Length: 532
Image (cartoon, rainbow, N blue to C red; front, side, top):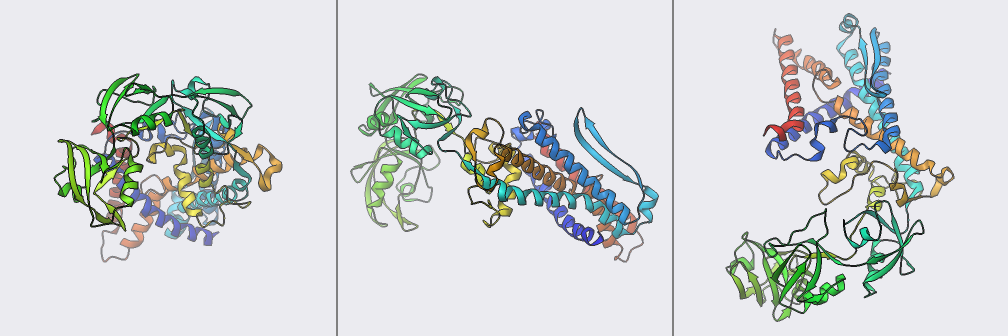
């Protein structure tokens, strides 16, 4: 057990340094960018399902299980090393809030602890986090192995949510549904779903859901992104669909209708249910201040540019613009017709080399004049991505031998609040809970367990997540955490080698100073948006 304790001390010291640096960097970032995000709300520091915004009540049994196990192995580690190192235990116990355990303690006898050697005390304090990390490793081993290898994504389109008032919403399609057929044709994923919609020009499309429900989508064109400078009188939001009714007086109902209407004109008038706008049609982008277009006098950083043609070839959107540049060589001069902040201009621009391709110094956005649209109004749940993060879809042994075990372990830390910290992501992952289980099927080596595989995966997921977080937090070099005690022991060892008679005072000054900095850092991480 002493060998295990020595290993734990080494690991704890390394992690303690990293945890301290992480707290300092996070506090600094919170001060420099004090805009509050959901993850910084004070209640989200509590591991209480239903109170913490990212810990749903549906996962409460698994979370409580993981929390109890984490507390038991942590404090059990302290208790075991107390026995090994002949340190007497004064008291021990668990603290509960209602039925939820929120803390545990093993209180060594103060006199007995002081009689023990510095090494014995350090091994005892490091034992708790060492056990937490070991349990995390075991849970990841099973989760990333046969458990994730027994889960696959179901065929179809998993629905994360539908745009309020959009076609899917009106058809009764909602979070947890899976679209499996379009016009009687099976679709295995979103790409096949999109292709099936493209093959029909009819506004109304019949679809079938996983549970056998059949419904009809009456498509309409909805704006998902616009350039405010080009459409100042039209607003979009996630709460209410902005529907394009007409383009240049022609009714449009599908993405194909919209593309056809926009491609034929240099100027388009859009009528929506939330305002109208007239704008130039072309590839929208921002000018690189060091690029060829800037050299021709087009201002950079003062609004975007709409490129309407390149050497006479129409460029109504970003795709057409890139296609036009495919025929241009670096060093070649082309005639560009563009709408700039100064109005419509005709420019002679010399292309430069950009990684072997011609560039005019324009960072383009997708869509017609920076406008992107959809005609169904669904947001696809990233079922494949979340399963891949757990090592799934990698064969019967999951991700054990994929070479990405450490990467996946880090991602698991973020999954419960993934949508809040990952740019462009809208969903969190709290385990295989209802209705997320609709998006997955059980197969592989543990198929005989049926739905029990999801329960096992949830227990392992939350056990690993809580043990890892508990271990990392306790390594923060601050009293009364284990990291604070380990810091003091390390400081005593270092100071004892110095030629000074004030070793005790130096040790106390160092440990108190670091503890105060860490406490201030943790406070700033949570409360900086309210202070600054």
